[in-house]
Image 1 (tube, rainbow, N blue to C red):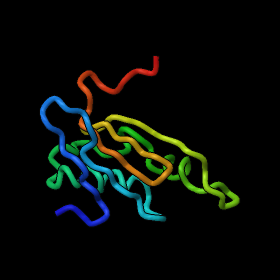
Image 2: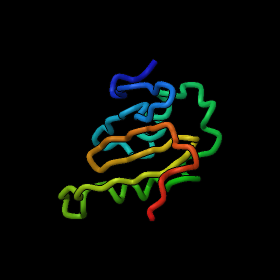
Image 3: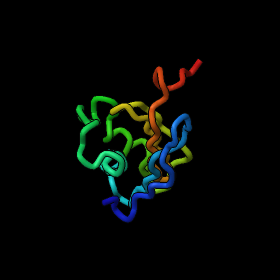
Image 4: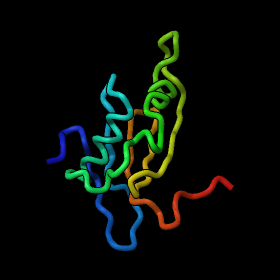
Length: 111
């Protein structure tokens, strides 16, 4: 069962590209935990999660990057995008984690 704070907004139809899950990060919740919870919503048995999250991204660094500044003021807008577990994962400073079906050939290049 999908936890209440996980919103499964749209599943992919064949040939469509759209997000599988939008997860709202709770205040004080580590981003690494939020990412795993979001993926858990579409992979409850853990069959695709064959490697730990830290193989792809440093979750502590995400918390530092997106957390409040030293004086307590929130940071500006920011986004981190990475591919892991055959999924494209987008983390936003707004407190949202989006999980997409990874595009064939990997994420788009920055060219």
